[in-house]
Length: 91
Image 1: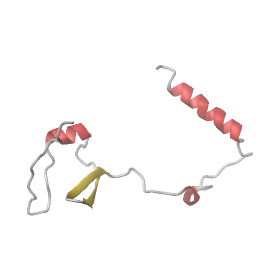
Image 2: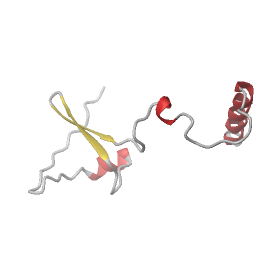
Image 3: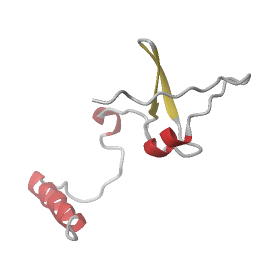
């Protein structure tokens, strides 16, 4: 297994760093990409920030208004299957 490529960068007086172009392109991190910064053993870990805040089902259950009778599990399963088939029809 090849050793990971290593880069060197400099922290500016404003606390900014420049990530090398090749790394940004491979990670598809364009200008404006939000990253999380975590301290890790021996360094710092950068990861893309989640698009949405972490939630639990109980935090959001029932927040959307609905009129009519609830769907059955069979109806929900059929809807999921129909959408999966629609999305993968061209494969």
